[in-house]
Length: 156
Image (cartoon, rainbow, N blue to C red):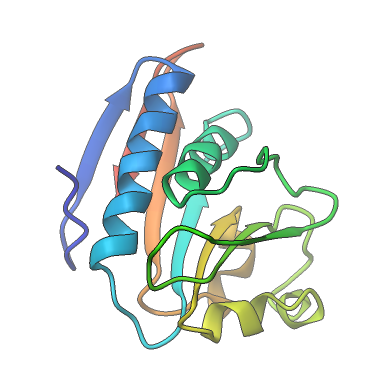
């Protein structure tokens, strides 16, 4: 369904928040089963305000088995969730870097450490604000607002 092999691009159009969550859930399940990395698996979410990043994060967390309600960590910057589902990951970190000034702030919130641990899966909203701190093998997901319900999601 989704191919995240190096140098491939996949574009999906969703017509509702529920579809965006469903795509994210499948994406998370696929990564949890197939993806290996030296450090954490890191997924960078990019797009304008209201483009669907947090909705995607909610579906992604569900795909990892997170039971708590997932909200954007805009003011706390990072939410950590212990994963109970049988998979190679033990923790899911959801970060929102909108309020960070630079890459230097990444260590202050412990995100650099989280991105190095192979037992973690890390999802970063507004990742371009810390572009230089992101691992080279980061999976990039870009959102484009088409209209009130429709989103274009680009996986690369």
